[in-house]
Image 1 (cartoon, rainbow, N blue to C red):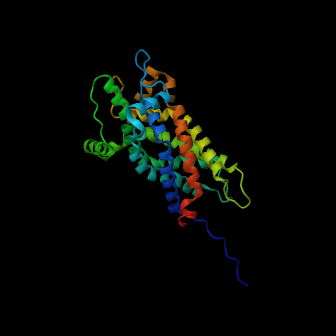
Image 2: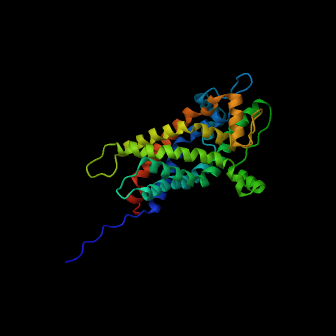
Image 3: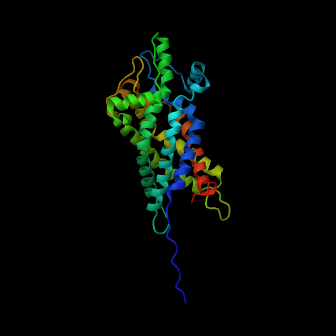
Length: 311
């Protein structure tokens, strides 16, 4: 009589997860990039001594950007973002799944606290790509705002490409020049992931499932990604404002320079009040909701496993 075979040991293969995450990132960013550009410009503008603003609101920023720079101006900085979003989203989504796999208890459960650890760890892993990506993207996105300000004041503003900026930073500061604002980026991404991933998992598990199906339909995953993404985005918006201002290398006329995160927080509170930390908050929610809704849906469709045959 043959002995019963032990059940196969569960294994985690990161390759299809990385491929899914990369594809999800490219599609998501391509769709929402104009909103992200507006968010950056709103966060960077400061209120003048008489309350004057370059952009009144999100719609005004859209209108002025389109009028001054055209349709393709709305995608300024998208090339570097799309190139680097592939490894960034691949790391973020795959790392979260990996940490969840190894943190799952023997009975198959994964308490919320462990989900938060998995999410935060994934957020910490991604900053190696996110920091230089955000640094370069912000300079490209904010160039139009600075050019418009310079034109109104009769000054010249010289635009630089992402490659020119990269060479300049590496030449002047070494490779670490691309990691300006890394602490603020880590604070934003780790805290975002701590909120987002457990919330998404909880909402996604509440979805309707067909008999025998392991996951809810794609539209439910999309809605769960949107809801979890917008909630986490609003909660960590103060970190995003600080990060954006710390990483903006070229300031406009009369705009403040910041020597550290604490200096940025102190000056922003002193001159603009606590509401300044939620500048671009609505815009960021609108950016993050479809970005993570799209990315999470594509990721869970399992393109690598189900369509490319990579198991």
